[in-house]
Length: 383
Image 1 (cartoon, one colour):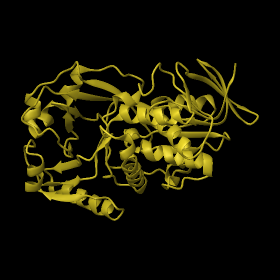
Image 2 (image 1 turned 180 degrees about the vertical axis):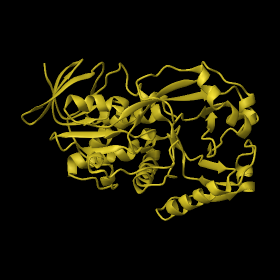
Image 3 (image 1 turned 90 degrees about the vertical axis):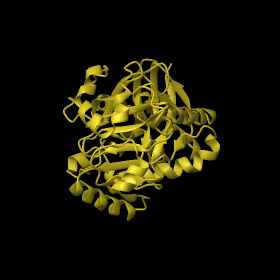
Image 4 (image 1 turned 120 degrees about the horizontal axis):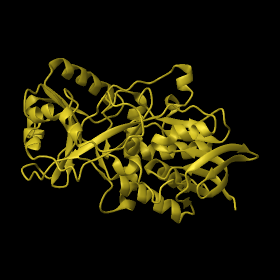
């Protein structure tokens, strides 16, 4: 039997669930989520670091973050306790005066676009992050930045979308996409689907899914690691997401422990999700120099993990229609910013489908055809 839907969303991670939620809130009907796993949010959403920040260097990323923060603030009474969005802040620090000057210029750019960001001298950084050692010239702090519970937010979106009538099929990987009268036909592991609109929100697998429809979406999977320390009772129970801009090492609280991450620029693209305990050795030195108390607590490999980023050539998402295939939309390629931008992405895609354009946030710079036009938008504050 063929399933019928007005909108079929491929992928039930936080982005796909956000789209379903926003479609429901805006009056959309017959929404069907297709998830290749047995449960929602078990792909990249479950491996996310969960940060949200507006300290970016492009209009597009700043606008997406601010819109997401506004949406989360508006939903806070409905979400209740525990909150899904905690404003613990993002702290970028450096020991290099030249890098600090660049960070100050970025802060001025951000402030002009409505971002709350503070410039700190060395003493200000040390007061906020007494666990940071070594030479410090200064830093920047975004008080509205903070943390999102990735799985909790995905489940909230899915629950509310389901209450409004959205349905989900599990164990439903998509193996074919073809035009049909009135929409697109999908072949999935759970049966055939005919939908007027299809949205690809399949995270790192979005490029493969788009290729089934003959569309080139330049999204590549890239492995990232998060290591978890031993217990550190000496640290405050809440600390900002703290980024050493000189080395790229970042730390945040993970319960009584600390989560530690570092992006390897030489990591080859691919679907390798295997956790490599020796990867830590690549940044052990910078961690010990900048955050010695955290380094001294040791690592717990059993609590640590790895997952996949979905990376585009300019580290910006793809949001909007694939013009070659009527009725096909893409919401992918967030390059590590999928959780933080999921609320705004869901609203933008829902508005495009139901109203013909994104009204809440201008996502024109994130159109798929920018790669063909050579209109890439490069972000320099990539973690």
